[in-house]
Image 1: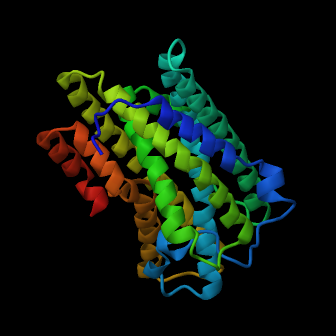
Image 2 (image 1 turned 60 degrees about the vertical axis):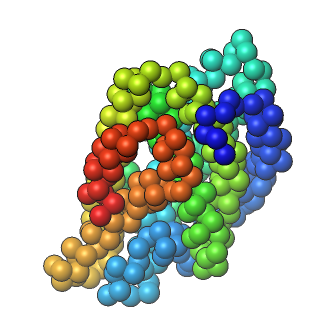
Image 3 (image 1 turned 180 degrees about the vertical axis):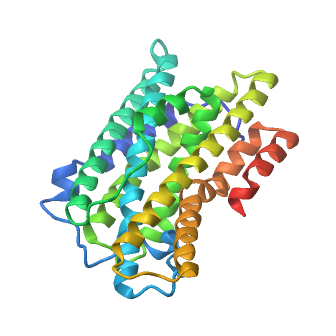
Length: 310
């Protein structure tokens, strides 16, 4: 595919058609009067990196999975705060133009607001079944303000990356795992179905934004993207520390120092993979990004990401 071909009304229309087909209601289609099953895992091992903590008992590994699964849902509630706001922002370019594109973006925003409510409901259900002491450190409004201060090109790049890793996580780890809480798994099935349309819209809007930029503006936008990746890594560090401390306090036994350090390292590695690495290594993301930037810009991005990916 030529990455620089104009976006078309037909592609937006297809997103609308698919959005209508997969649209869900939180209570009727997802929760359906059910509760989370705390005898099962939430986050699958492929995402939680449970293999890094083999010294934990099976019961402790369930708790490890649930702590990470709780944060996983909260992280998506967080990012959808700025995603929805940015989609409202870019929709203004279509206000007096392509009304099909405008409808696609309005539906996108409406779905992201619904997803925020879904993940607030998930947090309430998770909190009811877990001991006190859990903290979700980043504040959604503060993070949204900081992200939205960056160039539109960089924000759309981040949003596109997030939408793509949502789909990759579901396809490769969540959907195949039969050991997960049924309700938790269903939440992310419905979430992924709607996000699959969002990723297409993201790509079109990012390409459209890129076509507006002069070379110097794009170079500055690349710096903004690098800064956003660093900011996400900062959030990941804070939450990994909070979650590993919470998990260790829940264990009921004292681990050896090397094992406690391994738990902390596993949380950080898992969160870096979940929220950064799995996105920046996505094939489609790299194809689209590579169509916009030059070799020197690519090297700058790779150098900045090297400590995180390693």
